[in-house]
Length: 135
Image 1 (cartoon, one colour):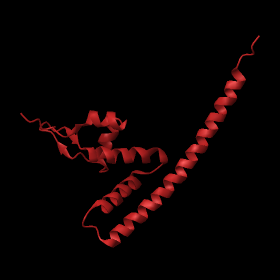
Image 2 (image 1 turned 30 degrees about the vertical axis):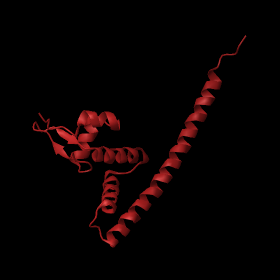
Image 3 (image 1 turned 90 degrees about the vertical axis):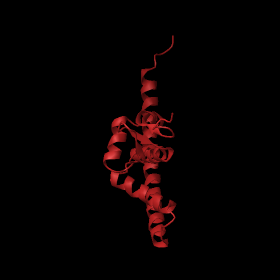
Image 4 (image 1 turned 120 degrees about the horizontal axis):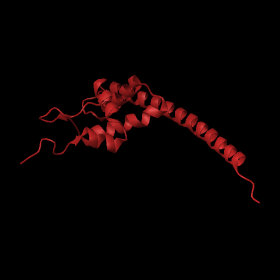
């Protein structure tokens, strides 16, 4: 007997694989970022590996300060580059978006590296200040 979830992942499995909360995944569905590829007979969200890959892209963008609108635009650009019927003009525009977002990601990553460095410096300072002298 075939289960209607064969080949699909349920939302809990997707949450575990992506390290996103169920609430976050549902929110991304509601705002149209990543919608489940199917629903079970009971109405439960069912996801494919491609859906998981999209969620992972979003998860990578989130700490870099991308807005939901930017996330959606980036995913649409990726889709445009992957689709067969995309015109050369559409491909050019999609590639331009990806370059713009790559630069933003690079700048955000550098900012986060600086913040991490400051946090490590503070940790070292506090460790040095709280170390007990040895007798």
